[in-house]
Amino acid sequence: MSVLQTPKPAWKTDDLELFEDEVGKFFTRELAPHVEKWRDAGKVERWAWEKAGEAGLLCMSMPEEYGGAGGNFAHEQIFIEQQSQAGVEGFGAALHNCIVAPYILHYGTEEQKKRWLPKMATGELVGAIAMTEPGTGSDLQAVRTTAIKQGNQYVMNGSKTFITNGQTANLIIVVSKTDPGEGAKGVSLMVVETDEVDGFERGRNLKKLGNKAQDTSELFFNDVKIPTENLLGTDEGQGFFQLMEQLPQERHQIAVGAMAQIERALQLTIDYVKEREAFGRPILKFQNTQFVLAECKAKATMARVFVDSCTQQLIDGTLDAATASMSKMLLTDLCGEIVDKCLQLFGGYGYMDEYPISRLYADCRVERIYGGTNEIMKLLIARTL
Image (cartoon, rainbow, N blue to C red; front, side, top):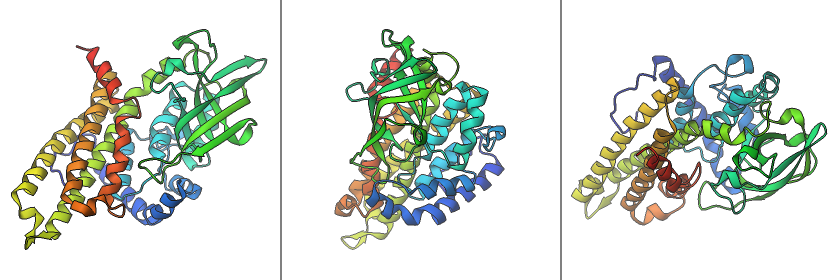
């Protein structure tokens, strides 16, 4: 049961509540016991993806005809929330489910959808999307990776960095220039099947402030030959517009993850201050503790209602880019604020890596950066003024 007492949203049906229980059991039983090993290794073991596929938890919102479960974003939200609640760090299935698979569904040809989505649903293929390059950051129009058509294939050259699932993924959507002389109109999305190409190289598994179990990598493309049928869709130059159309879901799923972390931080902290004593009484008995947590709970309650409202809009197909930017910006900022206040209530123990609140503090910091920095979100929102 959530620490927040908000009304059940309309999208959360009785069937979804049963599904929520099963997903929670899956994470607790199958994956949570392995988190420490994955943190030490810097990545989640490959079998975890196959196990999730067997349980029907990959590509849940993809149509059944392509191997999915025929669900919608509500299923993905429950997955993200239960993963956080179980403390399963590093498992990059939200990106696989909510970002990579939808690109193929919405823009892929029928042959591409039948070729890739069923294998993504089983975990045979693990997805990643390679946008960021050294020196470009959020400026996707400035990418330097090229995919130049030569006969019946493209030849790709370039490098990417900060790529989630980078050490594990074997199906990577690469943002590249098929016409380097153009800006946005020269961007295309190319699908690289890494098991079948020469010239592809994985660089370092990058060491990070947080998300220790998540593989985040550099990728290098050196004269990688890609069949023309691996251009996502049928026409070159559509990549930038495809990216823009899918950003609302990408950004809102980041907000959903932040909301889940907020609720977990509050629950961990409330449990701790009830048990931990100082000066002969539980920390919760001190007015300062009560006021801090009361303010956090009030803000989190407002945030939860907004997140669930945005989810309903996303399911209905009405979530616009500006509202999704608000969701991403507000929730990730609030997550940082609340987790920081919660850690303070743990005192010195909150700074110890063995305490989940310490890991949450480090893990949530990147949410204000990826998916477009929060400064970019403010620019997008300002355009609606």
